[in-house]
Image 1 (cartoon, rainbow, N blue to C red):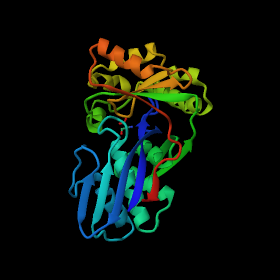
Image 2: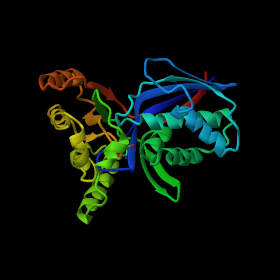
Image 3: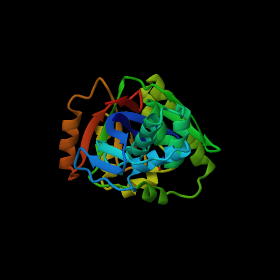
Image 4: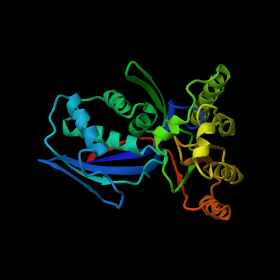
Length: 298
Ligand code: HSE
């Protein structure tokens, strides 16, 4: 069987709506091989579709179709560590696992840039799929169905404090609350900050992050969908966050932290959340995955 490991991703980074994403050190794993029929199982207790509606299987089929091949059947095993519908790129991880795995099963007919284009086409936007494939901090734009992207490393002075709530928020719902149009002032506000966050993360100019994560395109509209959002933002800054933002479409909230001053962060965060009556949230510290998805023989 082949094994595909795909990182979680955090899109937007606040101001880079639909444009920026970063790969994190939390991984889903998928094993697959061609078979006579469809056989899907899971190594954990996460409820996944085991029929043709399974997203990884669907992505495998898309790639076979793209290459003009027929998929006989598939044996698929999933290990899910990226929580579902939390703004950490779980659906992109499935799509990327499916197309990278399928490409390897067919002898790698598609190039990395073909795979980046196909993943974004299936997902609808590239800000999770591109970093899942490339790793690092990825800026991307789509033009005529093609993704133009670049992955850059992120300063090793940073870690990511990830606050995962006990509830889901579907991207469609989180997009449905956004306005149809924005003023020029709003556009300039976000453009300047998304440029600033990219350059600051790359260079390590961490004092810029608090301003650079701010935006007026999506977070002000989405925060009301996330119970406890304002309290978690406040708490993260009390605990030394350099910049806090809603990860992707939410509901996870990410605090960027100085790598050299994180002692006790998880304990302090959990204690304070409890004191504020915010229950069921998990807190993790993650780093940046710089390699992106990997395919190997198992
Ligand atoms: N950029 C997307 C959004 C990420 O914020 O809606 C969610 O997949």
